Length: 171
Image (cartoon, rainbow, N blue to C red; front, side, top):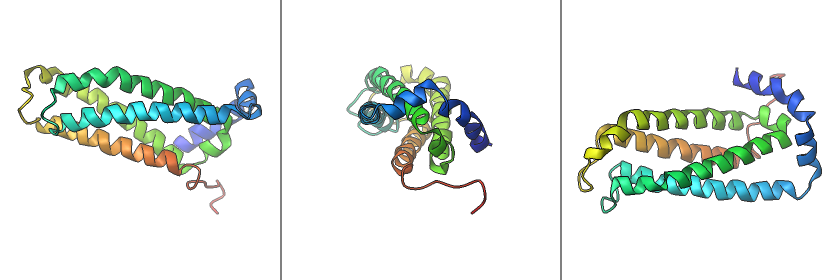
């Protein structure tokens, strides 16, 4: 279904002025790559520290203090969202038919759902946490799920150019 959804918007994206600009500006793709990498560094770097502390590691750090990194993580996500959309606009046929890209999109949605679960179930009880106490099981589950999902998202991003292409003909 997701493949059909992505492939159904390809004609609109491929014929857009934004696509033509991205394709014709030879310098733009490398600049987008740089910003995507910078966003990824902010996103993964911040989440690594936040999630590891949330899972009960680095107990020297106050859990609430690590959450001051969330604006940096969100900035990284926004940079990746913008550059990722521009990548899709630059080569919609390749991305829409790439199974690894589709998996990456599903995992990003799962990461978002995991973050919502964190805000609904874990964040409200963090007020009562002592920096020395162990993290509750629900916090550990959310943290390890986040680490696993974002690690696979990162790997999928690197694999997109190399694997995952398929044709609709079943060959």
